[in-house]
Amino acid sequence: MKKISKYFLIATTFIMANVPAFAAGENKAVCDLIDNLKPVINVLRTLAFVGAAFVLMDWAWGYIKAGDVKKDDLKDKGIGMFVGFFLLFGVGMILQFVGSTKGAGYFNCVVTALQP
Image 1 (cartoon, one colour):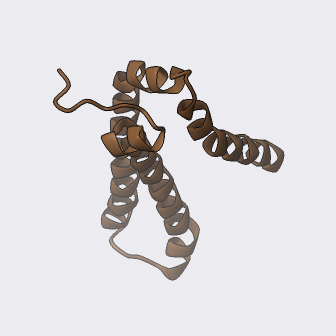
Image 2: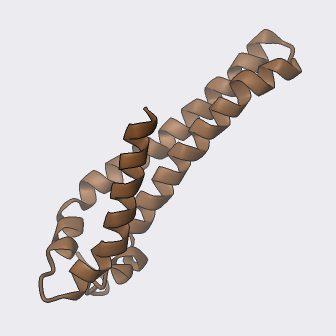
C-alpha cells in the first residue's frame, strides 16, 4: 500500500507541476478538458462534500448512540474519522478550485464573463 501511495504522490506532483505549462502553450487541450468535464467535476465535488458530511455524521451518531465517550474511543475511531473527513473535504475543495474561474485562470484558460 505504501508503494502505491508513493507512486500516486509522485504522479500527482508531476501533473500539478506541469499542467500550467501545457495550458500556457498554443494547445488549449487542458482548458477544453476541464470545460468538457465540468459536469463530472461538479458531481464529484458534491459527492466529496456529502461523503465528508456522512463520515462526520457517522462518527457523531456513534457517540450519541453509545451515550459515553472514552479516551480510547477518540484515539482509535475519532482520529481515523477526522482524517477521512478532512481527506474528502480536501478533495472537494480541490475540485471546487479546478472548476472555478480562479482555477481556470491558474491553468491560463480564457474565461469569458457571464457564460451561458
